[in-house]
Structures are given as C-alpha cells and as structure tokens.
Amino acid sequence: MIGVITKQDLPAYQRFARFLEVSYIPAGRADPGISSLPDGAKYYQFLIRQTTTTDLTANQIHQIGLDEVKKDEAEMLAIAQKLGFKDLATFRASLKTNPKLHPTSGEALLDAFRDDLKPMQAKLPQLFGHLPKTPFEVVPVPDYLAQSAAPAYYQGGMPDGSRPGRLFVNTYNATDRNLYIVEDMAYHEGIPGHHLQISIARELTDIPDFRKYERFTAYTEGWGLYAERLGKDVGFYQDPYSDYGRLEGDIWRAIRLVVDTGVHSQHWTRQQMVDYFHGHSNVDDTSVQSEVDRYIAWPSQALAYKVGQLEILQLRDRARKALGDRFDIRAFHDEVLDSGALPLDLLSDRIDAWIASQKAESPN
Image (cartoon, rainbow, N blue to C red; front, side, top):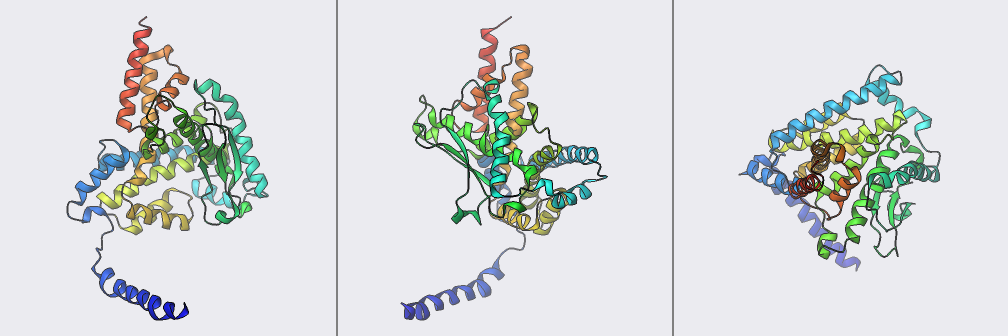
C-alpha cells in the first residue's frame, strides 16, 4: 500500500499541482465576475431568474440592497445611540468585550434559545390557523460536527411524530459566541421559521409528494428571514441588543444583494466586496473572506434570501391594504405555507387569488 501511495498517488498529485500552477491558473480570467465571460451578463440574468424566481434585473437588485443596507444602518445607529454610544463603530467594538452578551457555558447557550422561543410558541395560535403536528426541540450539534458546523441549523422531523423537528445549536467554544443574535436565529431556524414551513409542507395531504420536499431558496430562506422580522412586528426583541442582532442578521443578507450584483454585473473586484462587507457590518474577517468566495463561485444564490423576505412582506402589505379590517394574519400565513414551497411569482398569484376570494366572501 505504501508503495502505491509513493509511486502512483503522490506523483499524480504533484503533476496535478504543477498543471494548476503552470497552465491552468495563469490562463484564468482576472475579473472574478461572471459578466466577464462571453454572454456572461445574459447568463447572470438567467441565474437571477432561476434563483430568485423573479424578473428583477441585476441593477434593480443592487439598488434594493443599497436601500436596505441604509435602512438597517439607520435603525442600528438609533439603538447604539439609545444605549449611549456615539456611533456604530464604538458600539460594535463594545459587543466583543461585554460579558453579558456571551454565554457562560454550552448549556447556557441552549437555554437562551429555549427561553427566547417560549414566548413565540405561546404566540403562534394568534399568528397561524394551521400549526404543524410535528414536535419540536432544541438540541446541541453533535460533537463530531461542532467544530465546522454553522452556529445553528434546522433538521426536519417526521410527519408521524417519530422524530421531532430539531433546532441544532452549536455549543463548540460556547463562551465565544454571541447571545445578542440568539433570538433572531431562534425565529429563523426554529419557530416560526423553518420548523413551521418545512413541517407544514411535509404534513400536507392534497399535493404530490415531491412538492412536500421541494425547496425554492427564495421561498424557504425568504420565509426564514420573514420569520425574523415577524418577531419584531408582534412585539418581541424587547432587549435592544437582541434587536440589534436582528438587524445584524438582516443587513448581512442585504449586503449580499450589493456585493453579488457588484462582482457579477458591475465588475467589482474581490477586495471591493471585502471592503463593503467590513464597512457595513460587524462580521468577522474569516467569515467575510469565505462569504465573498462563495458569492464569486456561486453567482446569484445569495440573492434569494432577502428577495424572498421582501416579497412576502410586500404580499402581506398588499393583502392588508386590499382587505382592510377583514385582513386576518393567520389566514394570510396559512395561505403562504399551505401549498409547500413555491416560486415567488406563483406565490404572488396565489395571494392575489386569496385576496379576491376574501373580497367575494365579504363584499360589504
């Protein structure tokens, strides 16, 4: 076996490394954006349509991102000033050294998620007419995955109740993690975010099985971001630090709109992407570096999150304006969730049809 490795495997890897160094990398393009390729702009527009399931152009999405970043920063600054800081830079610096914003143990971090979810769980009957039967629990990420896993993620359960939906919380190096982002993540990854959306879809009986497991990123992640905002709309995030955490999560997704379209349609350099990220967020450099590489290698995928959230919010506003006092938030949420994941244009048609039916039922 050792002979095979030394005589065959290692020389093959060495030849491959030399090919990359001498032939492949020097022939690569200098511009990281996909628009530098032949018909790259058209291809990027195709990918936008595929990822967001909308007809938005790259320029429109770029401007939406700029506007959302500006709006989030204004709200962040108001929180910082309310807490006695003169600007966002000094406030952000204080977050790292404030011991109250970091858990004392892994169990304390799990308890923080559970405590933030309790009021939302009690509120669900006022927000949804249809709730999933699948149970839900908060558990730690398994030790063998923890070092490389995300801070939190959701795993769907079984419709028959044999396995609950689970919000996995990463307790690796728990004392270095931030408590102020817990409430926001709990709503997105858990309740009423991915647990309701995924569990309700899998429990549906009037759609084909493949649709119960379909995933349109703009819909599924858009719903997760909408769930974060819904917590604010119904009176949660009473702790100003948690409210800042909500905005930090939101601006991250807004920045994606700017830098993804920046590199792929406006010929931004990689460094411009990095600089914009650092200029408008508190995201650590390690994460920023990996994020921008992801956007370069996977054009348009990161656009779906914020585009989906904004579309659901716009649909809610449209329904509320059209129905006035007849608008029922529970019925609206049921209409969004009770058909499985959908492209956003079909979701818009579905909500328009629902608005029309509500008007027909109560013409006066």
